Image (cartoon, rainbow, N blue to C red; front, top):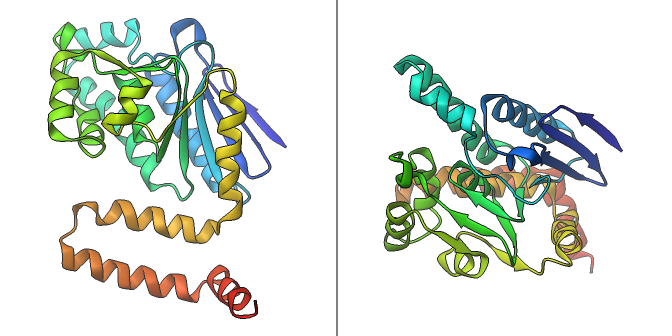
Length: 256
């Protein structure tokens, strides 16, 4: 087992599972530049570890992530255009990183996931939500815009649901988030950690190489034309056929 700690993000890995914890419980794990940069570093290190098959992202304390903290909002209000651009790009890099690293990233959401915190959760490949959790984009209530998270939201829910969420700024419960398409599964609060563990263990029974190729294929074809997506699928199909995992898997199947 390996462990690495920082004041704002915890990283621990064991048995093929890397666990990354946002560690600002006194601030409801609110986002600031330090947390975002440290989280990106933790994600990279976890993904680069050869034995890691899945990453679980959670929040310490009672909430997953409440969005930008007060100091970050104050910084936004006084920053120059260049400073705001750099700050926004840093968050954009985090969302892109989650989709581009080779292993699945599973958000384990308890408590509130709001604004950028809701975007962070739904940027993950899979979202597991405690029954008492809450989701929402309240930015419009302070005259702000859910800008980068819109690209994520628009890929998860229908146009009508997205419009309702971002223009009313209301919070929704886990069951509504499930019906909207924001989360994959709603789990009981009392058994949440155990059920999260049981779910991610399922990745131990799959081919890590095949999952990595499948993740890349799913997201990269998103903006492609039908024919380009098929051609990219041809290329990925050939890569998969030549992989050691596939050849061993075919041999096992044929020798049954």
